[in-house]
Amino acid sequence: MGHEYPVSKPHLGGRELQYLTEAIETGWISSQGPLVRRFEAEFAAYNEVAHGVACSSGTGALTLALRALGVGPGDEVLVPEFTMIASAWAVTYTGATPVFVDCADDLNIDVTRIEERITPRTKAIMPVHVYGRRCDMAAVMRLAYEYNLRVVEDSAEAHSVRPIGDVACFSLFGNKIITAGEGGICVTDDARLAAQMAHLRAMAFSEKHDFIHRKLAYNFRMTNMQAGVALAQLERIDEILAARKRIETHYDEGLEGVAGVTRMPPRDVLWMYDLLADDRDALMDHLSRDGIETRHFFQPMSRQPMYYDPDWSSLNAARFAARGLYLPTYVGLTESDQDRIMDSVRSFYLDADRKR
Figure 1 (cartoon, rainbow, N blue to C red):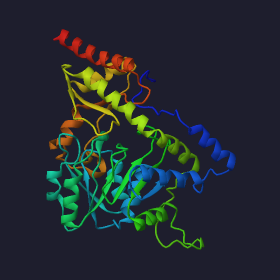
Figure 2: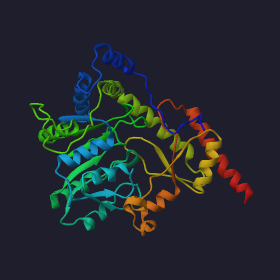
Figure 3: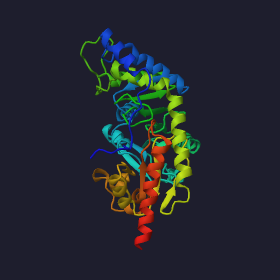
Figure 4: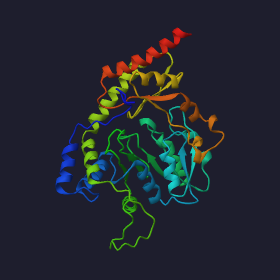
């Protein structure tokens, strides 16, 4: 059913229509249009990185980054247990094996457990900035240096967290901080990596364009129309982030001391407002009946059928997955909207107390 308060929705309040119209009126609707190059350059500059390579999704961005770094069959990549499954799938798509590392209490990869998972086959580490919380990148980079590993940051949920790995990969899906509807982008300071990712995303055509393809590649290109939407969003990113910060603060203040609710650590940027809840599933049903959509936390990778480990339930990631949810989080959500949502949370636990 539809909800009065969806868990997420895009805020298209800038020049999205202007740029889309420009793309259509000029006939540049494909990946060769000038808005793609402009978005790549401006997104890279915003992140204080030299190169941007736009593509069709955040999953595609991770796959391109891993392939450009030479990750392939026989290699292992360290991936958090607590993440969206696309992080692990990108590794599997290259023919490499994801090796999972449990999460700390902030949901990010537990850096104290990374070293024990490193083997002679380990090629890279993929830290994920979960729900907008920056990983302990100093610790990740020290380990990467010590063991000569590459670092691919999964920044799908963390626009404006400044990259320091070899490549950082962002999603531009409709529920992300900024969006193209669908899309992704890789950023790096390494010109060779950027060129290789651009080559791989566009079917690895030769300079002669003679239809001789010397490597397995992808059709992961971003269209000029998608780039127009993403560019308009990027122009307003500081405004968007400020609005999200206000949402985070109001939820923090309103949920302080609510019996049954445990607030999570602060976020560097707000993607989704996550929390732990007693009787989580019943709370979600209650909120849904009140017109409020929510989402469960991610499930541990070791619980997924293709990566199944029978010991998954002992993980810290499993403990959080069993109690976690996130509330509606989007620009356009007013304080009165949030008050309505938080009133519904409080009423659930008050009713539960009365029934005891």
